[in-house]
Image (tube, rainbow, N blue to C red; front, side, top):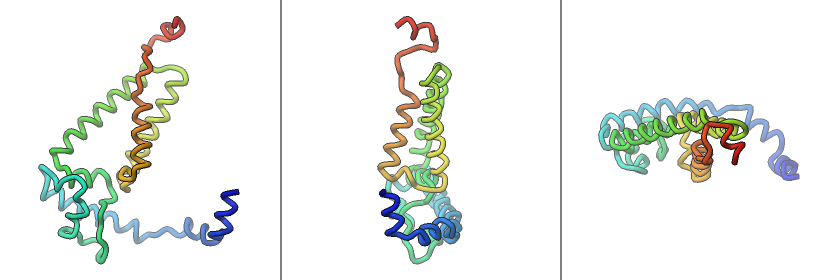
Length: 170
């Protein structure tokens, strides 16, 4: 019923046009935005500009999208590098490696339905990581919360060991 109401309100023609005509100008602006961000990274490679300062810094570096103030880099990784430099980048990389190690360790110890739950959560984490290369979705609270839930599912300790015989005893 909700779908019918929305379609009748917006109009099927407008909705179809929205998804069939891509906005190529928006897509083509991102490499230029990323190029400006790389200049910020080069100037502040050690300490970065400070968390949540990308929007404050860009007026001094922005050559892309004249007439607009860019508050996000449209790439979470570049924005973190610009705002945090190596001082934040190195701990983040260490945390990512630790997370990957733990997910692999937990996944190899799983069997049954828990294995597939972890596979699904790891797939979701990988999808978010891929999207973060071209968007700033983790800056939206709902997406960040979903990411946190997926990480929790991926590394959750259910208290069992890798041995199927132990779970059948208890």
